[in-house]
Image 1 (cartoon, rainbow, N blue to C red):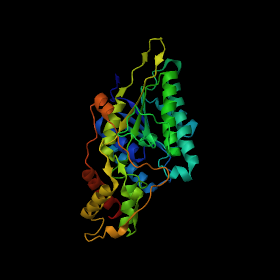
Image 2: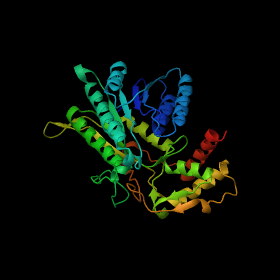
Image 3: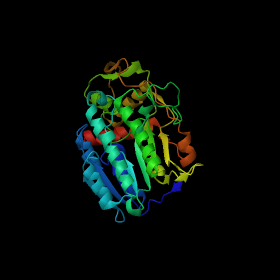
Image 4: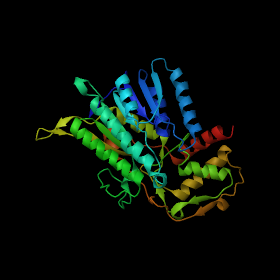
Length: 361
């Protein structure tokens, strides 16, 4: 692997107002010192824009305290080729972290167009910009890191999921777009020797997370006294991964790019890799919800005498969902010396405390 020192680098983070993107930008500003971070996000209204605006304000506040660091935010879409080409022409990023994507399995069933625009066309624009960053002998992009998803494993029966497994049977359009990203990245790595690493994230949660995620939606409904629906009658297991662990994993991956090497035939071997980032410890959904309601009561989001049992309903599985997600993270541990380790109760406690502060001041 080729080591990359982040000091003095220009890093483009797409989806920088998103959950993972904003958390990564904050961490880079705090931990690297001399760095230029370019963020782009279209601030769409897929979920509450006020959370995205709050994240951006947190970044601006942090950037103001870091005189060595430079931070630029651009409101725009990666599906706009002109915008992406303009960013590359002006800032010449050394590292690109593509986290901009339309997320969500169920939303892809009712709103497929936006997935094609963002996840396929947008990612193609990123790849093309990376490709042309080497034009005229320029140094170009040193590493492209991009978000994939545990959804690519579809209805695979073998667990834990390994990056060595076949992932040819997606059960949602969202999953299909993420697998397509990996295929496109492989082709561009082969053709143009762009060092690229895909990261299959497993159910990311934490403070200032996505309101479309189950734990966030459960919290909203319980607070309003509504009934929450627990799918597959609670017989779901998820590899819940705390946001700080995801960010630490991404940051470590950014600093080690796949090597550019030649094969025995003298042709380039694609400098391409894919890793899982998950907790390697799937939790039963019913247990997860039980800990969540305990922490919501502890934080004062719910009253101490809250009748939880009367507010939950066990229902069948939804289309496009899978019963178990479980990450084999041995490759991540071997190559980067890192394994996510935040316990579920600790992570949900931090979320509950943030939720109280954000919604119930």
